[in-house]
Image (cartoon, rainbow, N blue to C red):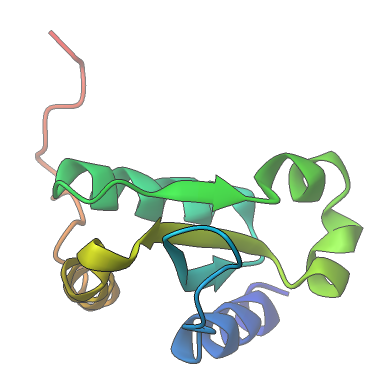
Length: 108
């Protein structure tokens, strides 16, 4: 089950629709079937200084069976941050945001 989810996420992420959304300066840079994955990537983008918003996250989270029909959770960034966002997505795919086993995540 996880392998098929990974393949679908790779397909959605590998070919994002870079068309501008009507009336807005936001561009879709990625899609994820699993809302948690989209939230992780949004956090990495925000930590890198890229303002990113999620679209359809709450709807998909309400009923995960809708995710394939809706195309998953979309990550949108301002057009002027597009190159920086793509670099962050590539770094995320390479595992550069992964925590080591000795990472202190206690928050204190």
